[in-house]
Length: 112
Image (cartoon, one colour):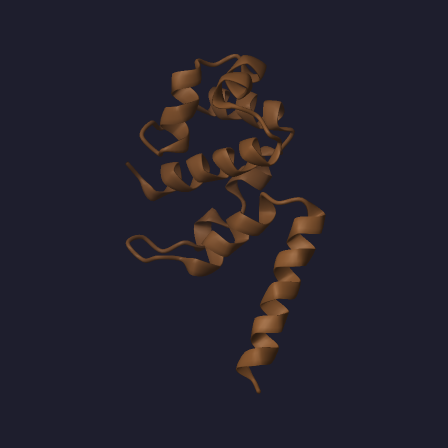
């Protein structure tokens, strides 16, 4: 499957778990089948625009947020900044602050 399908699937999973939703509950809220949610999250299926719109509304995440920064990834290369962005963006503000502070501490330690 394409890299974009994998990134979108991971973003859906990140936002779903941040909200404490099961795949079944997200499927119910978005009006799609729960196996479809799993296939999307694993990057096994290409989503339709209609289903992505339904899922984004159920997650209370804008379409632009789901697709944000995807054009910066390079085919065939591991994009660590994009993966970090995805990790951070799916967390609460408090969790983002904690992760950022951890990174700052690591940075201080590395410059000693």
